[in-house]
Length: 190
Image 1 (cartoon, rainbow, N blue to C red):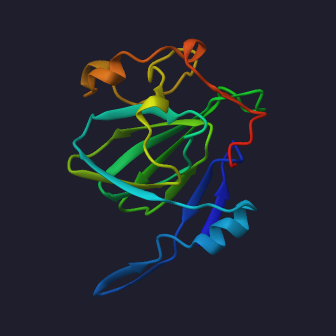
Image 2: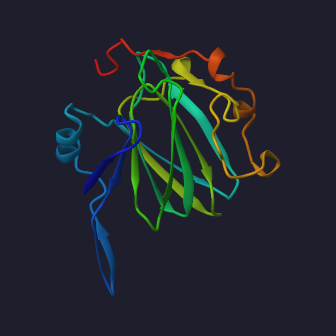
């Protein structure tokens, strides 16, 4: 496995080694020991989630506040997505900045989205299957979000808004400046 820090160093791309031949392929999708060694702290993933969506579905930008904040390890099993992470940690050197990366069944990349980041993705192909691990359980009372199309975030979703398929929840999220955010000084990994 290869670990690559993005322009926001806390957000990490993981590239697995693919062992392939005429029969197909084998990859190791998760190695807790190697990931923790690279990050320098312990992780304890407690829940796996999976969604299936068609082209144009946009999910996000979502996060959970402390004490239910979550680190996510996301990947695509079939199809492809444009995956987005937004630093929502007030006081962080990269506060308000975003990372955008294409994840696909073909490139087999994964993205580690740490606590304190909003996350969302746009589905680029029909029949896309998106899977992720989280290190904290879903908490409805701590579930938050922000507007995916906030001009202050300047995210290029690569689709016209009229071509997006959004949930009612995602059309009513607050702007970044009005959203409940994290404090960078809080230890997000208590």
